[in-house]
Image (cartoon, rainbow over all chains, first blue to last red; front, side):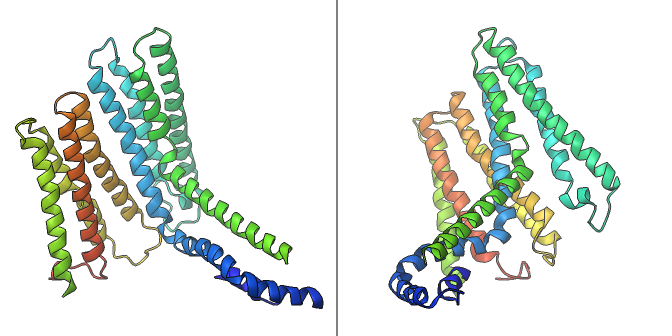
Length: 204
Length: 131
């Protein structure tokens, strides 16, 4: 755990402060080590399990979105309450999700072994179209909610269901987004760790 | 060996889970057999992960698209197994008490399946002859 090294390492500081450094180290060591090593421990596994956690989060969000729309279709079965064409929004978002996740980051950057059928430019175009479909279906879901349900004063649950299916279930959140969020968490915890270490050096 | 105790406790867990599922269907106050469709999800849930374990040789174990896809599909099957009783109960096909019993059975069975993979699945060459 590198945090301990900062605490007990040789810092280029003056003689009298060094003595206070050693004394502070002795008295404060048990208390601070407990806090910091807890953080260090859970960042070690993060690299390996990041993909698994992102896949689980993506699966949860995606399928929860679909089950919300199934629930809305069951509760409001007739055409007047829930126009069946509104399902298209979810289908296009699913298609966009599959398109976005079919392309890996390496293919877009151009540094993977096999170029794939389309090459690097083709991968970028594919990803571009996928993102456009995803954002388009999100906008469509908001439009459907307001234009189809709120304004005509119909029971609003199906519209909210479509919006949640798109906004929380089927969007860029899933897989790529989950990976981005877990990366943000890692970065954030790393920043906090460094922040805490710099606070301790400042304290000394 | 330590495997026998784990095996017995896991099969007990599976029996308890199935008992909850059957209670949710067969109690005279409920008497609706729609939740038995969940058996389909129970059987289907280990399959993607098993397929990915067999297909990929685990040489490049860091980033593995097949394993991630399998975990995604497995999570989807688990979510569907929780969503189906709730949708049934909201559609008034089964009672909410039956839904609660079936969800409890779900939790126990998926815990059992997860326990099975944790205890018996983590060996290097995944062969069918380990017993």
